[in-house]
Image (cartoon, rainbow, N blue to C red; front, side, top):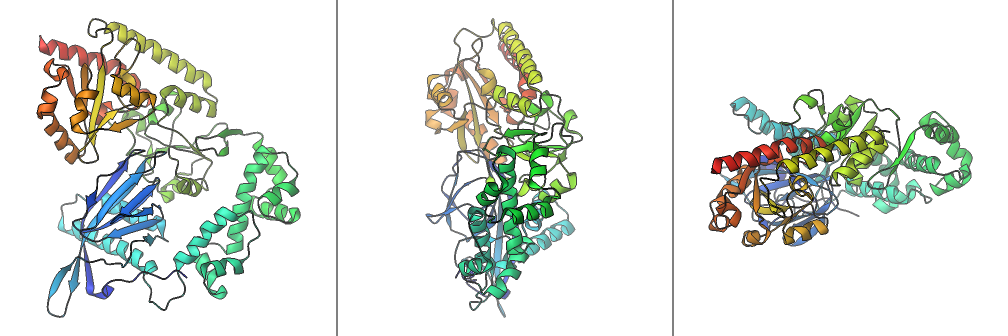
Amino acid sequence: MLHRKKTSVPLRSLLFHLVDINLYNRPAGWESEKLSTNQHTLYFFSSGNGRLSINQYPYQLSIDKCYMVAPGTMLHIENMVDSPLCYYQITFNAIRVGDTTHDTFTNDIISNHNGFTMHHYSRFIRLTEELHSNKNSISDMESFRQHLRFQELMGLLFEHNLYSDQSYITALSVNNTIQYLQDNYMHRISVKQLAELAEVPLWQYTPIFHKLTGKKPLDYLNELRINHSKEWLMCSDEPLRKIAHRVGFEDEFYFNRRFRQTTGITPRQYANSMRNKNRVKDWTGHLVAIPDKPARIIFHSETFGDLLALGIEAVGGGYSFIAQALLEDQIRNVEDVGCPIDVEKLIAIKPDLIIFANADENQYQKISQIAPTVTFNSFASLEQRLLTLGDWFDRKQAAEQWLNIYHTKAVAMWKQLRCEIKPGETASVFIIEHGKRLFVMGTIGLSSALYHPLGFQPVEKIQEVLDLGEEFREIPKTDLPGYAGDRIFMLLPDNPVSRKEANGLINDPIWKNLSAVKNGCAYILEANEWNHSDALIREKVLDMLPNLLIKNKRAQL
């Protein structure tokens, strides 16, 4: 049986004081430096896949958990290569209250680091987002409200994760059987078997399961089976008996009855209705029936301009992804659904299609219950992204036409710059992000607009990055000369720590001794204006780049 965690001191003797909260969006393949915490810290990973090492002990990240570490803990965070990683970092102080004296408590509040299970996920996310959005409030009253929010958040964590040593019932144990159901729905499963797996008495298992999911175990299992049967009904002409057996129903008549109770139509009626819809295979392999003419689209991607380029409007997106300064007029009526996606906001918007630029299957399963959902590779090339959207929305001709016009404009721009750029001239794009880490850009961002047969070429080391399909590569400062081209574009991030480091690099002898810098061919640009890959921003760069290069040349005369 899985026992609950214990506090290292009685919880009633501790007070908690919020220090700060930060939201971080890390790209695919990102890896942190070795970190050491100065205060008690909560890590809440809201999307992505990866590994968290706590004092060199690795944990597979889970978006339904929150990790708490004490001051002086050694940490290392690794993101997997397939999707971005989004997480909150909340720092706080713990004060131990005695009868006559009080002191700062720096030991573990929880005796191990397996993570808090978050049973009220939407409530937890709402509190976390409110804490983050109000972090810069200066009034005493709002600061007081911030601490109240934080106490409520801590209460949520402790309420479901701290029980007495004699407790034989844990929500975590039952929660593990939910994952078991998702992986083994096609097999014969009984409630007794699930209770034994959780090591929870049978008479207590069902109420706990219902509290976690809102459903009884067998109702949840049948719904899971029916959802999987829909995929088979869309893509297969197999007899109902065979499809029923594939997803775990032993009796096709019972399958037919449960399907009708759940959906309001029979399995065959569902299959026939799906034949009139556009069935697509998304980035991560889901076969999804999408509306022919969706009217309420959520486009949760950093390449928001891709959709706009095809004349398709969305009602929602993730503002932290969108180049708001450059697309201000086009996103006035777009609702922000947050990052990670706020499920309650999503439900309120009532979308009929969700496009989700993330490979996180756990998030996908949650939001796909709200509306048809397709995953989208926002790191793919401009051509691939637009043609994919063109296929999904029956606008392939519009996508091809847009790309043809764009490429014609690009050729004209590079011809215009013949007097400014020498044949074979190289260029490099650098940015400092995630603290003090230096990256050279590869297949995404500004560099994707610079490399062209008539334009700039990559240096040999950057060509290696491109050949490997790497979006970017972290490099040590000492390697900068090997990646520097005839022209250098240094992007300044919004993050104050990274921005300070970038300004420090610009004053470093390594930078000043680069040929491009000595020749007046180094450009310092704002990342939020230049380092985007979506279609509309790429089109804007065709106007912005000549102005930049010509203006810089005139300034040298």
